[in-house]
Image 1 (cartoon, helix red, strand yellow):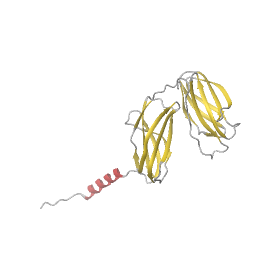
Image 2 (cartoon, one colour):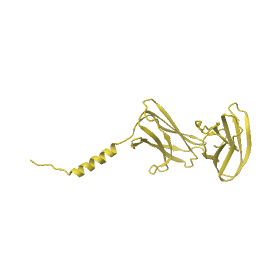
Image 3 (cartoon, one colour):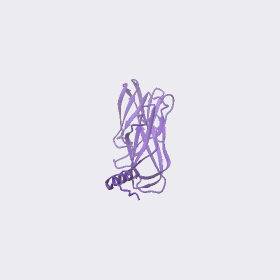
Image 4 (tube, one colour):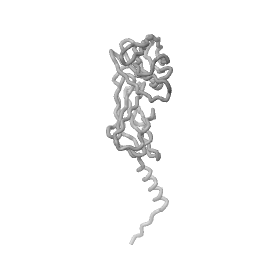
Length: 228
């Protein structure tokens, strides 16, 4: 009879490696990661059906499908067996083709990746909002605009009844521009900020609050006319 022997240290190392690869975060998706293109950027959405000890969703972006970079994170629900919807806005996307995936992490340090999705850019933007401060504003609303060529932009602040409260023309240079809109005189409530240049238009939604502790309101966007 042949005696079978094994190296205890080697077996322990193999078991540790095998166990490490099997440790994945506990989450299942009701609706997988989905992306929709808007003038202001790509809106990512997904829905989970079950989460156990979930901590964060890290949003990762890639131009080649090999190297992914972290572009933001969303706090997860923790523990839930009910459908939970999530959104993330990736503003200022310039590449014609980008890939996205989610890295979901648990409180115990385990992680799992969603399937990667591909987004093809179809809109041509002469200007693009690439960054903005929180859309729940106290004294001012700030955003960075990447402009293709110099020209005159009109911004317009209106309430939900469509009444224009403030409008102003701003000269933009080709390249990066900083737009700062004073909101100190606005009453508490929801407002639309319309940015228009030639036939291209973008609309953002902000909420004027009295203190920083108020919850943030997501940005909304729409497009009319040509371009955008």
